[in-house]
Amino acid sequence: MEPCSCDTFVALPPATVDNRIIFGKNSDRLCDEVQEVVYFPAAVHDNLGEQLKCTYIEIDQVPETYAVVLSRPAWLWGAEMGANEHGVCIGNEAVWGREEVCNEEALLGMDLVRLGLERADTAEKALNVIVDLLEKYGQGGNCTEGSMEFSYHNSFLIADRKEAWILETAGKYWAAEKVQEGVRNISNQLSITTKIDREHSNMRSYAKQKGWWNGKKEFDFAATYSYLNTAKMMTSSGRYCEGYKLLNKHKGNITFETMMEILRDKPSGINMEGEFLTTASMVSILPQDSSLPCIHFFTGTPDPERSVFKPFIFVPHISQLLYTSSPTFELEDPVKKRPQFKIKPDRRHPLYQEHQQALEIMDNNEEKAKTMLDNMKKLEKELFKEMESVLLNKHLDVDKIVNLFPQCAKDEISIYKSNISS
Image (tube, rainbow, N blue to C red; front, top):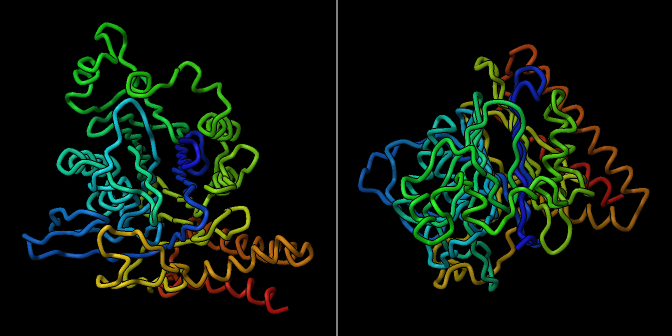
């Protein structure tokens, strides 16, 4: 199951500098899947009987939802990763274990990411939202568009300005671990062992009933619910272990740029290549000082090493993110007909299209590749400097911030266009 892989990271003081929590994720998906970066404003839902259509199923809507920015496979409702206006960030991972995966249409893990962000103003409240919905509606359904069948259970890394939570699931059963300092990462395996801070009320009794746990030995969630030898978990050469090593190597000095370097790391397998590759990346700065804004960087394009991390800050009246929004297909479109999502239309957004052409040139023209990458790095460095000064001076030019992310995407497109046409 290794091909479908993601890596999500969090670093908290004292592992970071300047009292910031740093969140990061690489979304590794099928190489031809487009990921868009989209914004949805906060909303009040007056019609209390209203149903909300997620990717496959309808669920009860809530009276109020928060503003969110999402990086998501363009064909579905949910998200691989994202943030909300209250500084909550969530990323999910595919996991498998002893509990059978349900192929029936239910909530996708990616739907649960978006629902947690829309409905919770702290990390722990987001955890509550996710586990309540898991209990009520279950998780399941095909996680890819087209003819390939692919389903999994989910783990989540949820962070806010104060703390982080790891939530790992097996069907409707789950365990959660609170992280208040240092570093933590998740990959495509269960990783909660004996430090369990919250859990499904029947999680242990179900394991006992299935014969996975004898009730006497200290309860180890990963060892019980998966086939892992948890003693070997930190010494194997898998991405979970490699990610842990990279975080620890920089412990005490981790900045948002360090997190980006980790996401760009190819030798570790974290920046993935092949049939499954890193299709999009996200890094967030969550300052513990609530007078400072949270800053969320997204690529919206594959391969973070050859992409630009562009900043987004929540302010009122955000401009729509047109350069990273995929074309929409109406309900009567054959794509949405049952069985759903069996046809793959062209979902490439403007930035993705230009980036694809740029990658082709980079692969075939060394000189142009160097020029382009130099210009991309220059743009990124300017943006980083600008964001550091926002955090340092506590000053937000709201008129500029409204258009910050689209303007950065536009500047990135200009770099590609000038090299494609030259």
